[in-house]
Length: 323
Ligand code: PBG
Ligand code: ZN
Image 1: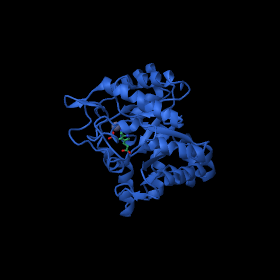
Image 2 (image 1 turned 90 degrees about the vertical axis):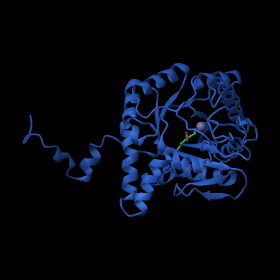
Image 3 (image 1 turned 135 degrees about the horizontal axis):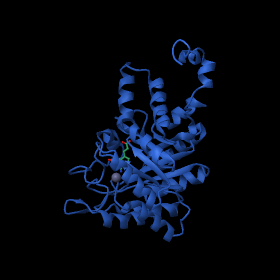
């Protein structure tokens, strides 16, 4: 059966029909709001390359978490910019570290919010790499030892979920054993399983003050050309005990979100990263695109590709639109 019997336009005729046959529905439930936390109080310092995003002191982060929650977002993810940096990033496992402080304050005010921690070292090291440097490169296994310390300190502060982003081999297994050994066997791990060495992270490095002082991250983050390797990374993380698998960035990697959705039954997350956001904001500021429609279309494409969870700087705003 084909034209003129089959006419797909019949089901596009009215908004009522379009609503009836819509296949994908973006909801606030899908959205996770990232927040950048800095020491001090009363601080709300805009990030110039990320319109609408600020570095927030703990008191302001509590308020922002409340806005995300009230808009209907179930979760936030915290990035910390510490007072001091050193070669190993030791302030990340300080019981009074910046994310630990923020977590205690946010969980006290908003106990029902799922508070996730980005688990890495690049914001905490003076060289800006995601672990300990030895012979000019990040030393995998020594970094794993420090990851265990970081997650235990975060767990003790009341965090609800760990999101390791450093692309170290064995990081999920190390974190799982660190958590289980400290009595936190119920804390889930959302692994940045498939994370590429991407130019789309540029604006974030201003927000998180985490740009590497030498070299780049290509010895640990993936080559953007590789799709089979993405499946291998995901398979390893599943074997190591990851509860949720993430693809990052999202927009240029929708094929891999779909691949992971088809190959695994774990929930899939996608990170709508800073550069993806900055492109849309810049075009919208020039009057070249309809900002709201492009944002909804962009996030819907990630959900349609298979992402259950979307980390996006627009989470709170979009959740308000969707109410
Ligand atoms: C750090 C980290 C990065 C992002 C999230 N966690 C940057 C990087 O790897 O350099 C990027 C987020 C974004 O661009 O929005 N491990
Ligand atoms: Zn890092």
